[in-house]
Amino acid sequence: MKQTGKVFSVVSVMLLVFFIFGCSDLKNPVEADNTNFEGQQSPLFSIAEATSPAVGSVDDIKVIGYDASVTVFEDAQDGLKNGWGIYNAGGGPTLENVVDNSINPPDVGDPDNRVIKFFDSEPYSWFVFVIHTQGYINELQWSMKYNINFEIAIVVDTQDGYIALSYTPGTNDLGYFPPDPDYWNYARVHHGLGDVEVDGDWPTFSRNLQQDLNDCEEFSNTRIWSYWYWFKIRFMPMEPAPFCEEGQKPIVLTMEYTGSGGTYIPSMDPQDDNKVTIIGDPGDPYPTDPVYIIASDKDQPFHHKAKTWFEGWIAVGETFDIDAGDADRLKGDTYIYIFDSEPDPGDESGILQYIKFHTSCSQPLSIGDQFGSVILMDGVVTDKKGKGKGVSGTNDPKGPKDPKGPKDPKGPKDPKGPKGK
Picture (cartoon, rainbow, N blue to C red):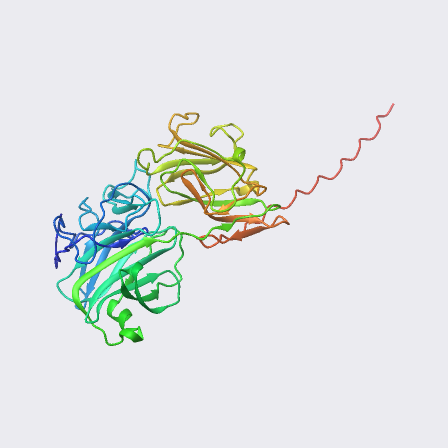
């Protein structure tokens, strides 16, 4: 593990993280990676051991000093996960230091592209990382990846006690909140991070913590006076919503691969039992990541008449589009095949999961429906007149795709004249 420039020893295990982070380029120089936190525990929280999987990734947490010095506290390049812990663990969350395969399949992935990846089967677990600096910081910067809403809470030690600085996507700064058990009985100051799309990209955020604290009237003169900072993040569950109604037809279904799940879990009204079939579970016994997915209109992935709606590598937490394309709309049933590797044509031996569900809108279809290891996040449907109409899920709706107009019928052929005698 390299350490250059200013080396700050990070002492505990506490970063609230319940969403996905990552480094923009995933190739950050190691300036001051985490030291070994074994035997060192945060005075604020108790840590639960990670036991089983879910979704997430983080990397490249930087501190920018008043002298413009930059110190990287986590870039995952040492292959370790020292300094990380989990708070309020209820759904079997885990975290691992892994090679990031969200850009390239594993056979061409760069082994230097390492991130801290989080898995959790239930929302609201906090993944925690503690930063201990040698001086006051000017800005805290991080990059992250996410497919659903998230919240970051940075706990700072001040002359008025511990205060949680809370950040969520959006433009509203909600300001002061009194002490709350959900925030460790600390007062909280909320700021919006701006109009960032929940789309699986890797944006970078930078916050001046002292300024964010003083922007709140209740703490306008409060100073951060400790060199300890608790960085935390968690996922927030989506609100279920009907995706379409009878008479409409799906054009695009945006699905998220979760890494595990072998059952149908409707978020609202369920489809009839005979309309959904799920066989296998890519999370048995541990989530398979990444996987190769094929979605089509046939119950055989290599059927010679199959229309392939999607095909490619997908990592845990990533989304993919089941897209009707030139077919204008999806068929009544859609089939998803999840493989452990890219299959050769006709070879079904690597199938981890087979999923069939109804996609004509004559059966209920809702944002948040989970079909095995995939969840419906968003998409595009036709209106009852056949025009494309975006549906707002956790992602911004895609632009509508207008179905093709009907083909003009060919003009009638003139009959041949009678043959001469």
